[in-house]
Image (cartoon, rainbow, N blue to C red; front, side, top):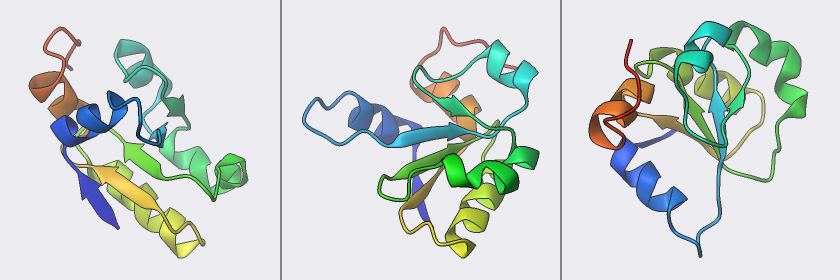
Length: 107
């Protein structure tokens, strides 16, 4: 599994020439409603096993949660189930709020 920091992900998302990864936010509905990275796809962690078939297997998937632990578990699950290009956002949405978007609500 690969790992990416919030500033590295921000740079990639802001690069018009780069390929945009699928941002998979695995937090619960209330967490996603509180804050999220624009363009993210939300599938709560407990639903990933039954909805993994909805995910592209030909695009990088960056898994996101609050601090990075749940998303790391989801990334490992996806790798075990045949997804080859999976990355975990180190520090999760909290790191994004602190390091990239200070205006983003924190919880």
